[in-house]
Image 1 (tube, rainbow, N blue to C red):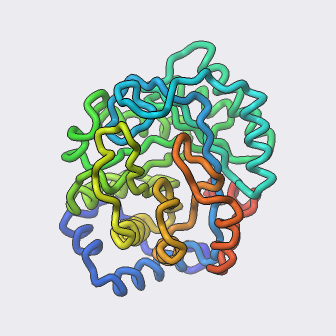
Image 2: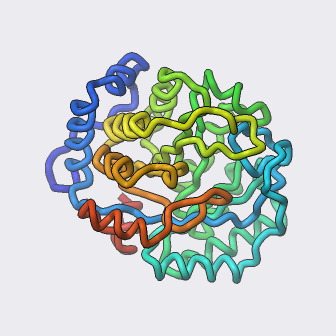
Length: 333
């Protein structure tokens, strides 16, 4: 059933590249109209999920992801920092809740989770965030089945692990972790009963077919990811991708609209790169099917629109933030 009580079309997990490319390349207004119909059939209430993202362990990552400011292999302004204390994370989560966020996501610049004191601290953070009535999400790199099980026992709602780009383009962006490593982590997370949050980044020198292949991969997951973050590359000085041209806003709109059509019930999150978009471009993204944003002035190490700007933007669009009870109910569906 769709959220308005009508019978919803069966979800598909078998889109071909040709089908996705045909959707992506529709005349813009036709694409937007189609995405809007799908969106209102599945999300009729005009509500937007507000998520806050906090880096609990910044910098010093051993991987070579070409876009990342936190890689120890790149000469960026980000320096390794000690892991945050639990009480500092709880204070940040409480502020986020009081400002209207319903999900609090904690990120660590790790290649993979290692058992030990740092992981135990993350588990405590998850428990404390849940005690505040928030959805808890983490992004920690690769996890084993057992680690995912322990995160679930601590109360974790969602695990973010992006595929980043197509399998074909992936090797030109990252060499220290394989595409299949990422898929394995998603399987481990899902096996533990944790919601999957997985999307990608556009603007990394990929082709349109690469973008469509990424969406084919994401929509082939069964069930579809609960959340699909669509990021535009933030060109961080000192990273290998710093000199690439900026993403055209309409390209981001097309990506969001196509994701909405392929994954009707997922939350499509307008993520990194939003600070570089005009109000009008952001409104187009919402119209195309985005119904989740990161809320707060930082996304790990990069900038994000001011909270007051976002509140004004949502009012202008007639959109309403999700309430905590609604968010938790939607996550359980």
